[in-house]
Length: 111
Image 1 (cartoon, rainbow, N blue to C red):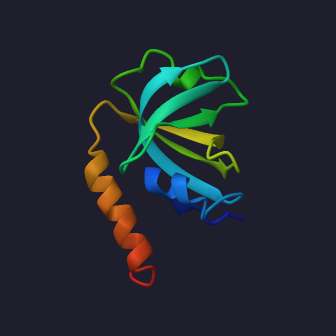
Image 2 (spheres, one colour):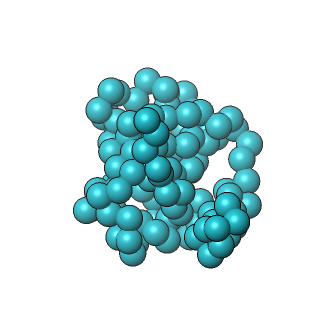
Image 3 (cartoon, rainbow, N blue to C red):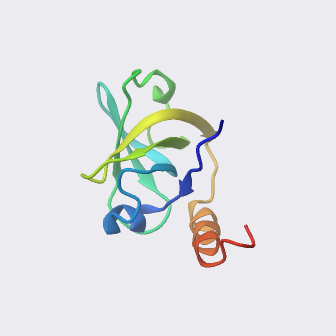
C-alpha cells in the first residue's frame, strides 16, 4: 500500500505546514556528512538537511552537480529523515519544479 506524499519546496520547510508528514523534496547536493547531506531545494530558502539512516553512499561524488529526490518524513526542526532517494542526474531545472509544485498545491483536483 502506498503512502501519499506531498511534494514540497524550500518555502514549505519554513512554514512547518507538513511537519510529521511523508514528503518529497528535490534539490541539488551542496554538502555531505557522515549520516546526512545538505540539499538546496527547489524554491527560495535555506538549504535543507537530510538525515540518511542507511548512509550517504548514493550521494558520494555528486556534490555540486547532482540532483536528488528524497522521500521521507519532515521533522519538527525542518530536516528530512530519508526513506528513499533517487538520483535525478546532473541537469535539472529546480525553478520549473518549484512552479509545478506551486501549481499542484493551488489546484490539487487537477493534479
